[in-house]
Structure formats: structure tokens, C-alpha cells
Length: 455
Image 1: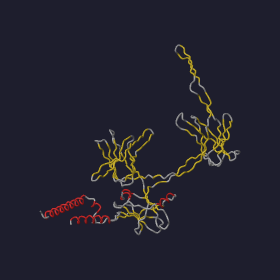
Image 2: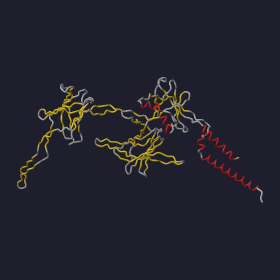
Image 3: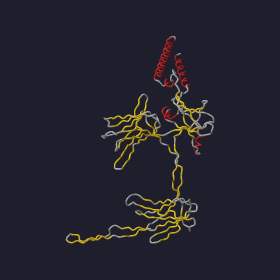
């Protein structure tokens, strides 16, 4: 009888927990300009959602006015950037002629299918030079138009690793180009070749030095023409700056460390930026978070970095960011190893991280609300193939906003069945009942054995 009672109680508790629907603590309306037009809507999550939603955002639910759940795609907010890159415009050298006293003129034509040239580069292995060029363009290799009158190429590697071998051209559609250099060589003085000294009685009466002066012509390996194209780069995740709720600095004299305890609103952080009044330093730091193991917790390091600053005689260099894999914690600790140095004067601490948005396809005329804030919802599995295909085709989401947050009052006097099933109290009760049932069964068995007839 007791076994039946125990089984019945367990079944009732299990069914009650299974039937319990998740209660979302917060709700917000999705606000858009035109609810009749067809659109791919994007809703950016904000700090209110970050603070109240579950890890992994598995509790986000989008529903229409009839309570029908609407599929969405959750993604990190990214930017699509463009860049200008140089692409070769194939060419052929037609002619080289000497001009004047040591000058040269080179005629080049673009290949038949080459794009119009936006510039050219003089390819040479020589160093330590400076030359002035004139560049003319022509459509028929007969009538020439000046494109660049005093274009300079140089290499100053004798003094510093600085050079310029590229020349930009104004917009044009010419197929022939003439590159002229009035002086295609430079006079160079070699190192000292001979030193002659005249001495008398150990005293130097005369000194003569002999050096060689030579003319070194410019050796051009080739002339490369190019045009510029604007290319779209792969999307890159947009960085966001997040304020922290508060931070507190304490000093651990025993371990010679500074401890910065940081409170956040559970934003999706990937690092912290520190601002310090200390001008020059280099310190090893760790970022730690608390991990729960059963009823015990311990600090776990999620990042190691070296923070540096150098401000001296015009040098202003800083690296005061420590990064880690994305976290959504309420509290963090930064440990700064000071060794025997005075603690850093920390002015401010701010977070850096990702941003998230929901993308969905609304039905015309429907109104939508976003619900969140429960730990009982399962991770949704939505059909997002249509949304992903639109993104692949280049469609950008139309931004929609969120209305004020509405708090849903939790159900009073309703026990948390999930916690009850997972509690030590229930486990103790179940074990006690099982022991009672077992003892009762043994007692009944012993009694029956005692009632058997003896021979």
C-alpha cells in the first residue's frame, strides 16, 4: 500500500512539472512604422533584455496579438564594409627613346581588354634616388595630353625606410601613355678610394683624398598600370561599448595585487577597457568569473593579458584592453599583478562586446510582442531558411524598435515544482518512504513465514 502511495505522489509531481508552462517576467511591444508593408524586420536587443534574459537567449519568444509564436533568427549585429583595392591593368612597352642630356621617354600601351588606368607604379630594385616624371596620355599614340607634370618617385632608405613608386592619374580613358624623365640618372660619389699623407718628423704636412664620381642611371624593371575597384568585404561583427554598473578597487597587500570587482547588466561582453592616470606601466592582469559547482563556487580565470602605457617625449602608446570569449556575467574581477610597484591609478572601467538582433518576417496587419525572462523555456527550433536566403541575397533588415518594458507579476503561492523535484528535501522524503516501504515489506514477509505450518 505504501509503495502505491509513493508511486502516486511521484507521478503527480512529475505531471505537474511537465504541465507547468513557463512564465515570462517581461514583455515589450515591437514598434514599426508601417505594419502593412512586406519587410524583413530587425529588432536590436538592448540592455534591459540582456539584464533579464537567460544565458544563450533561449527564453526569447516573439508572438502576435493572437498569441501565435513567430519564428525569428538571432544573430550578432555586423557591418558590411567596403574597401578600395588596386587591380592590374595589363600593358605593353612599345618604345624607349633617349631625350636631351641624359633623359628617357617610354611609350606604353594598355592591353586591349584592360580597364582604364587610375595610376602606375615604377618597379625598380634600386634604392636612394629621387626622380621627377612627366606623364602624357593619348587615345591614338599621336595626339598627347599632359596628365602629370611634376610627379615624383623616391627612395630614401639611406635615411629611413620611406619610398614612393606609385603615381596616381586623373580620370581618363587613354590607351597610350608616355613616361618622360628629364634626368634618368644620378651622380654618386663612392666611398674614399685613396688617402695620401705627407709627413715630416711625425708632423702631417699635406693630405690628399681621392674619390670616384660616377653617374648611375635609373634601371626600370617594368611599369605596372593599375585601376581601383571598390569591393565589398565579408561582414564583420560590430563592436559595442557598454558601461558597467559599478566597480570597486581593493588592494591585496599579501599577494601584491589590485582587485577590481565589476558589476554589469549581463551584456554580451568580450573584454574590458581600463583608463589609468599612471603614465608609464606594464602589468600582467587576469579576468576572473565565479563558477558554481553544486553548492560550492570558485573563481575561474577567463583571460590573461599585459596592460601597457608609454607617454614620454612625444611617444603616446597605450594598450589597456583585455579580451576574452563572450560572457554574460553579473560580476567580474580583474586582478592586476603589481609585484613591487605602486598600484595603478584606475580612473574608469568600461566593457566592450557584441550586439544582437532578431530578424523575422511579420504578417501584414499583425502586431508583435517580445517576451523574455524565464529559466524554464526550452531552446526554440525555428524554420529560418527563408530569412537566411534573404540575407544571402543581400536584403537588409528594416529596423524596428521596442516599446517600454512591461513587467508580468509572478504567480503568487505557486510552488516551484522544478526546484522541488531537484531539492534535497524531496530526495530525503523519497528515501525515507522507500526505507519505510522496504521495512514494511520485510515485516510482512517475516510474518507470513512465521505463519507457515511446521513439520
